[in-house]
Length: 347
Ligand SMILES: [Mn+2]
Image (cartoon, rainbow, N blue to C red; front, side, top):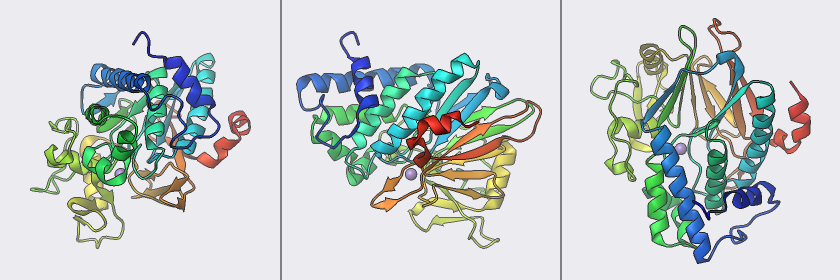
């Protein structure tokens, strides 16, 4: 890592005003390749050392002194990520003087469907390595090589780098946890993941206990993952299923993934002691949607997605009171981060 110019790369991305798929000054030569390999190596080491489990649980935080931020799908939107990171850097810097802690959880789907996706991932990892105690990346269904082959990320890498780098990145994706739990004992707990509730297909009303299951998720191809891991990455909530139908093969994504109704959701949440689920995976032009009496919030955190304008949102979550049984969920629009000084002075 000695000659890896971390600060130079970080400052480059942080101050870049415009970018196109060819413009990165570090790309296209041997040095650039070495920098990329070093970056992904450092990111792999970070996740292997700090988050060796597929499901990570946080209990040791001060609930009233922590601001949580959750971010849904980005899909290679560099400008949206740039706005968010600029906002978070200011938040993190301000928090240390206020004795507060900022926790930022990304819910997966960083790449594909946008030619700037490699830049977006690189910037995200630089941010993660700069603030390892504040940032956590979860895995989405697009952090997976068969999706990357189909939807563009593989090409983004191979256009300028050898295949070995793509293999290294696919291996890095296997290190990302599938879900994170934030729990305050005797109070409130949040489950964050990309897709949704994994269903025990042999006995659907017998809920999966997330803290107890053994998952085989650390595979670079979805085909080698176990069924429950696949479902965590791919399932969707549905409020349009008939009441008697608890779940069905996913009408939009194919039959090995599922849509689940409120009953499946409720029994899963109760058995696991979860109060709120935060997930991504579905495109809503409003950037978010609440399901199931507001106990599930779905986020989409990009302003542009395959030609569609999205009013991309992230969620800020606070535990106002240690003994309160409720968290406050506030939606923030990425468009508002264009005027950072204004939004940061607001309480
Ligand atoms: Mn997805």
